[in-house]
Length: 305
Image (tube, rainbow, N blue to C red; front, top):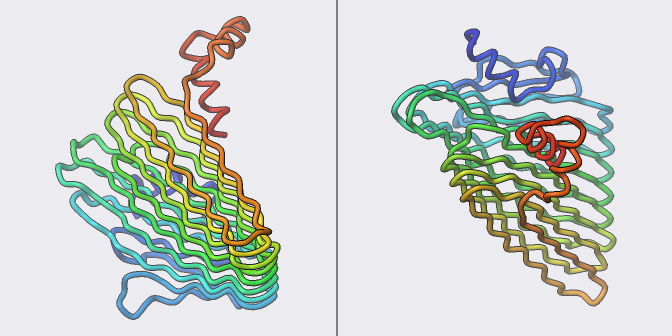
């Protein structure tokens, strides 16, 4: 990696990757750095288009970094990563993609991640998307995440699209077995003529399973956002879907939440709110000495925190 690529990496990784128990860094379609240990192994797929990550049973507090960087204009990188999480394990996985495109051809990353989480295990998954570049070409990200949660297992997903992504289409699918729990927190910011679409499909299959999906977004200028969710309860379960969006300028935000109960003991809830920043919030902050621009930034930063 050159210095500019190292700067790009810092935008999507909160900590230095060297401190992780295991890591795999992908740059312009190829793996460039890798580290494993006795509890976490990473193997390249035979087709070269991704990796398999294996976490052994009883792994405690493991950390895996798997960032992707695209710095070549006109490149489309497609990667398939599978994660096999053993029983009674606790692991944090930090992913994400940074695209730097200063050319005249669109650059894209399509990442397909599948998680197979065995019983009594806990996974925290963080994913940040970031784009930059002075050229007119687009920076495109299309992530897909598929999760199968075993009995008594949990997964917490934190995803963020923070800046510079022109087009994004995120798909997340999950199947929850008995007493498993899924929490998803999504944050999206769009501006200019950017487009962002997210789709969640959650199947609550096991008794006492539960899922919470929360999306918070800000759309400004001429940007467009679409939020779709489909939560199906087939057992004694609880599901909650929430979509909150701040809209500005000439932006457009669409929310399409769907809940489907196929069991008399299923409890499913959906909420959706789209609106502008409340005037009383501006007044309160400006009375404390902030300018209108500073007040707006403070409100948006707090909303997306």
